[in-house]
Length: 484
Image (cartoon, rainbow, N blue to C red):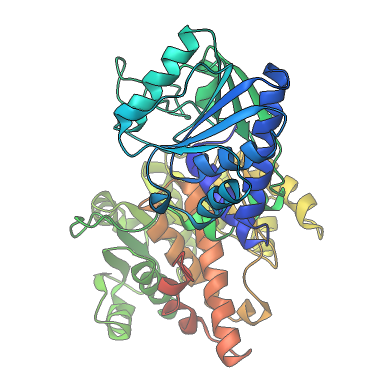
């Protein structure tokens, strides 16, 4: 099963791996043509009702594969309104090949005749809301043809149906296509099981790596809403420092650059002035003493309650009192937290209602009781098993990062040997904290690893090895840009 959002990400990741979208459309169209052949003999009349996006593009391709059939492709709109280059190219190929086409500028003029098969290629996955014209009229004409005995075949998902839920996108009484068959691509969509239709899944050549490895597709949908206000994009509390002042500062600055609206640092008063001195953008709360200890719990819990995510651990150290503070904080905390550095060692020994993203390197993983291996896929299975026992999301840093929530697994291969320098893990913790404020823990960890490594790669490309952790921070916004 794959959701529509995840499918969009996988599509983009496949393109980034070098599998062109045009090639995937060719495979999709071929799969639709095969499905037509399964329900109708040569010479049958086939009407394609096509939208102006890539769903329609799949149908344009399919029509080229059906030379033994009486085919017409009906475009709902003018050719110049086709929304993607590859769909437009395939429409032009139909016209040059003199395959019958019809354009519908007025939905009331749509006439698909009396076909043996109708192919619904109006709208694909990810569409929201009730069908509007001309798709509404298209769905009504398809319904008329079905009542007259035509077989209705939907491309990817019937138009007007939510592929994730199987519900009608405009509500219970809204117009939607009722399909006899659905040919969907790459993997089954959850909502299709609720339909009274035969569903076939077509392999269109998307490589396993497009799902397994993080890529630019994982960034889709993480942009800011145009009407968002301060705080809507996340408030992060970094709890750290004591022996070290740089680590919590790196995490806090990274959280800001990764998109958080507000970042506060809770640290010992002994280093509060130093932390504040690193950046005027930070809000610093100092607590008495040189290290954080159980005496600070109540006030830090109050502070944490006002934030979306806590980043716990950068620069804390491993003093007995500090680890006792971490244990009690996590036992009593029921929010979302990134746990890093010395704070990691206490996680396996506690019960907590919190949602955690643990970010160990391989040495810290072993200290937590996990196992590792040289082969990335073998290591991934070991980490997945450990995360399942832990009941939390785990991001193990390495040449290939492993990210898992105990069920799903993702590998990340951005980054480079220059990032073995100290502090890059603190940057990652902060970036993951900002992301965890706006998306689920597994995705936050996967995207955090991807953008952190991507930022490091940009530094090395520009300056070569010898980078320092602060180099990554200013490149995080660019690393999160899907257009780069």
